[in-house]
Amino acid sequence: MFIRKQDLKPFASKVWLASPTMHGDELKYVTEAYETNWMSTVGPNIDEVEKLAAQKAEVKYAVGLSCCTAALHLCVKLAGERLYGKPAIGHGAVEDRLVFCSDMTFDATLNPVVYEGGIPVFIDTEQDTWNMDPIALEKAFEIYPEVKLVIAAHLYGFPGKIDELRAVCQRHGALFIEDAAESMGAAYKGRQTGSFGDYAAVSYNGNKIITGSSGGCLLTNDLENANKARKWSTQAREHAAWYQHEEVGYNYRMSNVIAGVVRGQYPYLEEHIAQKKAVWERYKEGLKGLPVRMNPFEEDKSVPNYWLSALIIDKDAMCRQVRDDSMAIYRPEHGKSCPTEILDALSGIKAEGRPIWKPMHMQPMYRCNAFITVNGSGRASTNAYIPGSAEDVGADIFARGLCLPSDNKMIPAQQDRIIEVIKRCFE
Image (cartoon, rainbow, N blue to C red):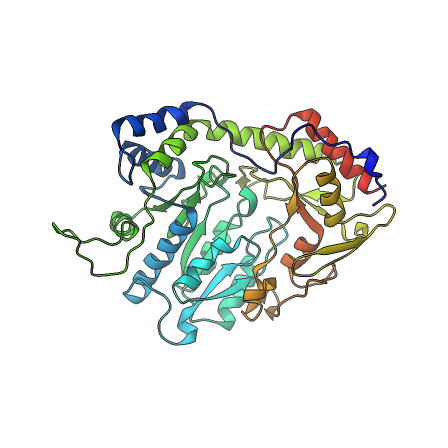
């Protein structure tokens, strides 16, 4: 690194990637839960969160759950019941167990498929939004025409090409699950993300745009599906005076205490989005002149929630970087940099960044799964991927991209310092 350690004077307190922002109303509703003894998985806070979540997402019903992964799991079960007459997808021939999934995402998007015995098939990423590529999805249906379920995420709060993805699903009679965990409050063509899928999920995890420290909601326009999800989330208890069980259930219901935190956060969603947008725009302006670009979106169609600001380095401005499954090394070079060098420099001033999501087809547990690019069936990339390949867009973004400190409480002076450190990496 050409930046001397003595030049990296750290911040007095750490600048986080994304941390919770509390306002005080949360404590009011948590205290009400305590004082009225509604401390379990029923109560007025849960009722209100479900109402607020449905209204914001522009759907009819929301089901409050312990986390977004639980919501996605129940989405998969609902899809399996609709497709196969039972709440599972992991039965029958291998071809009936395949599910098309976003490749560049957090593994919670697709782990529920595995919970249910399904087999993820990973669809490559497109450059315009860093989300699932509709052309690659169409190619996937040409190779596996029997697939009937697609799960797509909106990366870092920036909507994917939803109309194109849905159109491909409709042509092939497939259901569409929308993972809106990172994109609450984002919109596509004037509609909220989470309102496009046959089933959808949002997250209230501790670092999300609003938080309950944990929690999530399943979103649907079908009352029967909402009621099934509520039943499954409370151990699938039947309507009887005793504990009667006729199917597998889960302990997935949201706590009324957690719901109190979420309830107190909802009025501040738009404020948080505005703050996140200002962070993204300050980075875009401040990094002008460097061989980098901010994470993209379709400006004529999408309104992101700007949850995480990320950048990608131009191919010809990358110094040599190699990663294995747990470590990364790079060779410093004047006028060039790489994600590892920038992240090291940011860490030196106590600012938290992180690599882009490592694509799922590069993960050890999924390297044998099928991976589809726009040119057809691809194969798993190595960690020593060299930028510039015509295929494997996700691996290229992972190699050249990183997430920047995006906390909405970061002040302009702190962000200016971060920008200056990034500039120094390219000297």
